[in-house]
Image 1: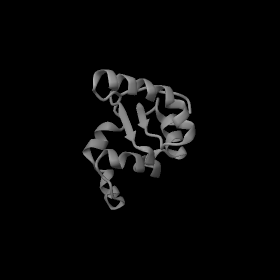
Image 2: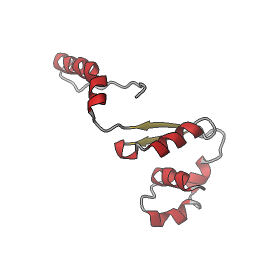
Image 3: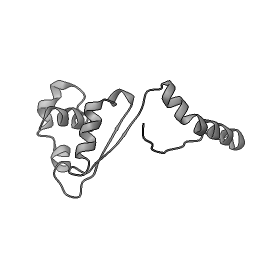
Length: 109
C-alpha cells in the first residue's frame, strides 16, 4: 500500500494515529473494501483534507478503485462570490419556513 493510500484509508478505518498504520494492512474492513468489485468507497473530508495531492489521487483513481469524494473548501473571497446567490436564496427560504436550509451542488473551482 503506498503512502497516500495509507493516509487516505487510515481515517476511514478509524486509525487516526500514524502508530496505528502498521495494523492497517491487517484490518478486516480495509481488506473487505479494497479490491472487491462491488465495493464503492466514499471519502468525505473537511477543508483540512483539501490538498492538491489528495484531490489528484482521488480523481486519478475514482474509476479504478470506485472512489467518490466530497471535500470541503475553506472560505475565501472567490468562493464567497461564487455562492452569494445561493446563500441569499437559502436565507429567504429560512425566513419563509423558519427551518434551516441546505443546498448541495457541485461546480468547477
